[in-house]
Amino acid sequence: MKTAIYPGSFDPITNGHLDVVRRAAKLFDRVIVAVAENAEKQPLFTVAERVELARAAVRGLKGVEVDHFSGLLVDYAQRKRAVAIVRGLRAVSDFEYEIQFALMNRKLAPQVETMFLAPKDEYTFVSSRLIKQIARLGGRIGCFVPREVQAALRRKFSP
Picture (cartoon, rainbow, N blue to C red):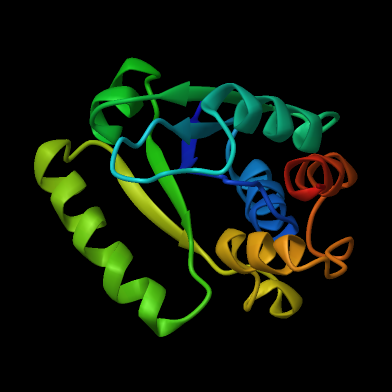
């Protein structure tokens, strides 16, 4: 059984993330959407909330599960016996950022490959940061996120 880890803060998970998950699920027997506990970031949603939203979003996707982790990604990948780390790339600027991590991860755990997947064109401009900004200002985000995320953002930003 080949396992891939799709790590991220997922604050919140978007339809762009889900597109990458679906693509990865076609390539691997098991895909773990791994919600990162990152002390450097100040997320809108708690880890528990992000895990819950991700689980709701991937419900029904065969071979896909959600978990959370802290510490080094490669350590987590090795504990889960993953053969690959999946990362989504939207633009060249993403690549510059991601390649540094991929090369470091390869040095730390050469048996774990990093695979980059590009989302559908309609999601190349979608980011969690932009979604939160639009939601905070009362804009419509239904075409960018699952229903559960839309409702959760509405609750966070309602007066």
